Length: 216
Image (cartoon, rainbow, N blue to C red; front, side, top):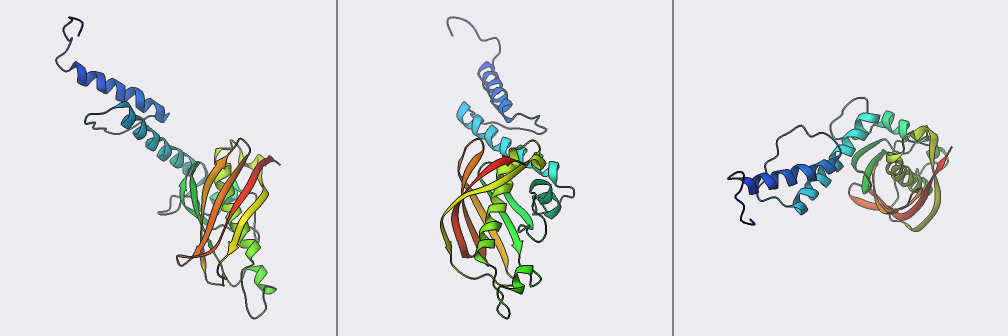
């Protein structure tokens, strides 16, 4: 190039390797592993760094709140209580099983006959109140909102609005409710979520929720 000889016979490969190392710096954390690259480019390098960054953020959050590693569980009840201020009988999320920070979260609520609200809703025909299904969805989404807070004990998530809420089927004692929340829009202190609740793979409730992060 420019009438200059290459310093090394594999100089183009070395150049690509340096590009890869520079792009992987975007992960923001040390990488312990082996990376094999075939015809790498900035676009593919940055996509790899983005995915590694997502894995790193999830692992960092798990280590921060989860005391005991459990297969298939991101946060158990004890970890959730470090993030949310809710307590029995109003903590309506038992565990988090999937989590993509800033994108989506999946929580689980196991509904038992011992829930206090079944004493009055309804005697002889227990059904989980729809408003508590919405609350369970909001709490699941709240965990995703608070994931970036330095000290979650100083923060609380407030409902701002709900829209397009639909209840499709009743939820009974013995059901396990799987709640999926997807982040639609996020600002510095507020966000909009689309949440769905399932029992045995069937949709039982859905809706758009808006909430804000406030100081306690």
